[in-house]
Amino acid sequence: MNDLVARLWRSIGGSVQWRLLWLSQAKFMVGVTGIVRDGDGRVLLLRHRLWPEGRQWGLPTGGAMKGETFQETVVREVREETGLKVRVGELVQLKSGYRLRVEVAYEAEFAGGTMKIDPKEILEARWFAPDDLPEGTLESHRLLIFGKAN
Image (cartoon, rainbow, N blue to C red):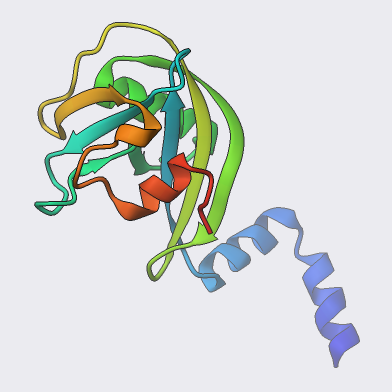
């Protein structure tokens, strides 16, 4: 029976195999975070409008869009939320998040531009020394900043 299933599977071709796998597998949202640092080692933090009161400060974060690499997500999110340009560096976190969510984080380097926040999502954006983060910084983002993410 297993040989029959294997022969049938191989005979249906790649595009049909792909569609069947797509229909049968769980779908995930991917949250992507950029740990953006400037030349002085300061980190870019945003006060997010839609996050809970008392926990609104955090790194630039957003959902990956269909057809976009995670590095492209970092570049897009930082640009949309702050108007700044970044160069994406090393992957520092890849883990399962809440329910069907995957959490991804990359180091990124400030590459230019002028700060212009998106007021629909962001209340404030500032550069902070890692040892002087504002109260209300999301704990998981503090861990990312200090390289202690799990």
